[in-house]
Image (cartoon, rainbow, N blue to C red; front, top):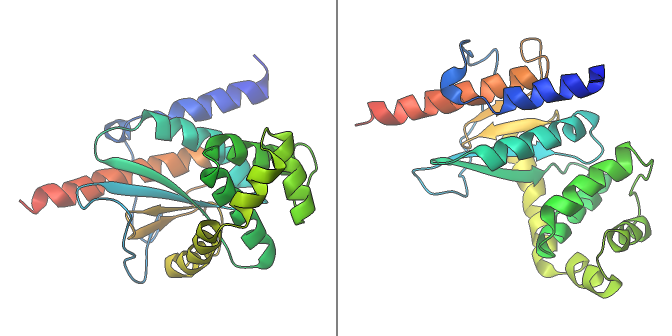
Length: 216
């Protein structure tokens, strides 16, 4: 097995570890930060929302994507995984529209993964609507279906809401993981790679579950 393949395999394996298997503590203010104000989640009160905030132009978001998708597909019970594109400039708003148009077309994972490949592997910057439309049609979407989704009020509203939530979460570095609308996890001096990110996610999940048990 090549070194890069083995490294990816180890990272994926780490992302499948349950929260109870993590031996190391994560400390608030060091491994993760409390949001200035709690942001309402889009899940039921008895669920824990794990929200990835990403941008297609972010290299680390690109390498994290398959690992988080694998993690999402393995979670059960009280966990809910969600994605949200970060928006703080016009290019990011364009890329956010790619994500929400893909979701409107019921092709979220396919378009999401292909957008990362286009930018980071195929040197296609997806910087104009013309480039984006060609990208969608090359990924099995008809021009008519693309136009309908791209220009829909629902997609426009979703992009606007993502811009507001980016500010609400205080996101200024990507990728960011928002835990139940209360905490933000990013790469830092203690969370140095995706494996450490996963450990911190699982430890915060454990802490949130412990809080709920203590309420009874």
